[in-house]
Image (cartoon, rainbow, N blue to C red; front, top):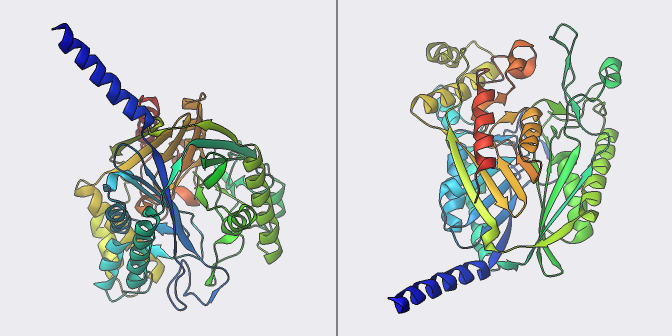
Length: 452
């Protein structure tokens, strides 16, 4: 009996030692996501390519199934489009969809991807007017191929780096609330309104966070997180990764290091206070972003990490629907040939989201924990208050947030925002009800409180 106990203890110790010593590896991938000329981008057909777009990210490999993090230079990927992206990348990485996070950076001269909405539009003679299905599927396939290639070159991770820095004169809150608790000024991505430029920055998260992966003294890749709409001037079809992508490219070239950037919760945050919509402003915003990225890199502190320090959790939620999502009304708008094409597009995307919700589809929110770093992956155009709240839930950790996951939700405001008025929470913009705040706060709290 004593020999048996000794054997069991010895076996358990051996398993624990192997787990602690298991290698943590990273595969870094990048694929072209630039639409062809003539292809529909956010507000017009692509007429020129100012700079190329990409889908890029990392695959983390440890004891469990791989984890895939992917950032795409498009305006949004929603509904079954988001499903197909995650499915394609999961198959390439040899993992499951629930371990794949796909987010966009929300550039307004990038492509849209929503196969559910496109099917509805095509049935009413509007196919190809807002979505280029062939291009989207080609990009998914290209990204999957890049993952398969990257896996053959996976590198060991020995250390995790963490740094942060304040970004100066980029972000400002879009919603200026008056003394009566109502919106008095909407300050969008660009503004020449002196009142908008003079108003305070408002509620933002000014800090850019940087997470890097190292093999000894050799950096392998870095990821940055910052919350702002990335627009300077846009809407004519001149495809660009915008000032966030241009800053990313600067830093990537300076360090000769793969750089993946994620947009945080910035549904109500943009550069309107500091951006007059001129080409010159894009140059300034790019430099301010690049400066913040550089200072976060210079502030990096490294700690040793193993696969034991990686944990992935998922919590699925049904977000409460906005009362304006009425099937018969949306179907009538979509079928109305005299209606504004933009309203018909909006009706299609909302009808796609409504149908998925009524069929029992839930939004998956995930948390990647790497040592003392937690990264939350969230849906839609989330207000910055969610990001700030997540940080307050775990003040002992570095908490990063990537929003603009499943874009089918539209804007996701806070509960009080729905009574304040404004563009972001009007029926054409948001598909969720005020109760969404409680649902998401509870989900974040659950994920952040769970121990690995």
